Length: 487
Ligand code: BES
Ligand code: MN
Ligand code: ZN
Image 1 (cartoon, helix red, strand yellow):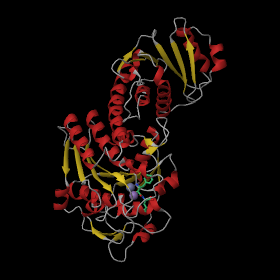
Image 2 (cartoon, protein in one colour):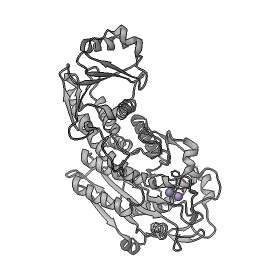
Image 3 (cartoon, protein in one colour):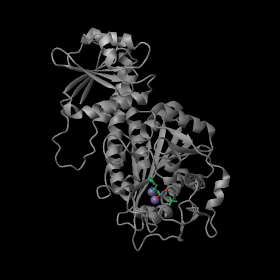
Image 4 (spheres, helix red, strand yellow):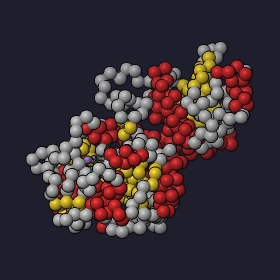
């Protein structure tokens, strides 16, 4: 699809007109009368601009206009959701040329609008053999024109570039997340990263199994040893040229391409959803690519420990004691608490080989965080108040919300081991997301600016795209927003 910004006010094609619910509703509808010749008094009978409300109007030549309600005081994410929903619902009937009238709005809304429209075109049917109902609007023939006020043209252009960059990356991450384990192994993530690095100009190094053994990433290796597919550690580095004083941010993402639970096997009812246990990896890899596309002035290191967690005669068993990359020993109480184990090596590798000013890990780590926060926010764990504020604000701005959870040392008691330095599970059905975070903290070498985001409820969730839970792309917009605001 091609997207154009125009400042001419009278399009002839199908048109979408977003409308904010406010005291000025009548005036907004009067603007519509000028271009679509329906009196405001008539429109106001049928349309109150509620969130996601849609009113179709037909013109004399058959062209369609959709009034799209945004509710009162819409934030960027409300714009995004309204457009995503409209374009997803209309998918089958969209003509190839569509205009959106943004004359009454600030040019910055273009970012959310474009992310919404492109998001609405997402097709979950990756493996369906019949693709005939795919809308041509979302293919090569589609043309979307955004009508903005002349003095908003430049702002709108910038927002368009940003949105297209993020939307393209996000779509690839949705595909990776939604891919099942027979289409996606640790090597698939590695191949994606190498290819992306080549296309967008950042460095990617893959540590294969032999190299992991040589460098003794014992925690990652122990989780992978029950699987036929070998583990990898992906190390990606983006550094814009000619600027030596940049801040360095280290991102680490859990990349479990399938989590059976291992010997502590999961029940089968929802096990198929565990193809999505690499949501942290998707957020990290997507953020690296998007940052490189947008040429953000920041030095980024992305590390993804990637593995399957499978059951086999060679699998790690409960009670086993393993030695992590950092040299610290871990008693494995439950092999289903594998995310924190591979992240121990991810954190260790980051801190021993790079000097990041800030370290953020993202992981679909615990069911417990879903019990606490449901599907409306990710858990945010950090001892650093400034970092907490910056991340939470980025969450509010993007609608990818974070809610801070405690990290008091009292919770550390639960994961003390009698035989090793630490154990990977408290054995208690309480405070599971917090003791997981305390486990990770043990491997941060007292870094003053570390944050952990438990995104188990947010990465894979109910969406308009399907009847089963599917990928949300959570984390990329959040982290890009955070990075743009800290540099
Ligand atoms: N990948 C799961 C966490 C998860 C659960 C993600 C539901 C998304 C949806 C993680 O590896 C896991 O199994 N966690 C266990 C830990 C427990 C055994 C200590 C959990 O949360 O039940
Ligand atoms: Mn698990
Ligand atoms: Zn897991």
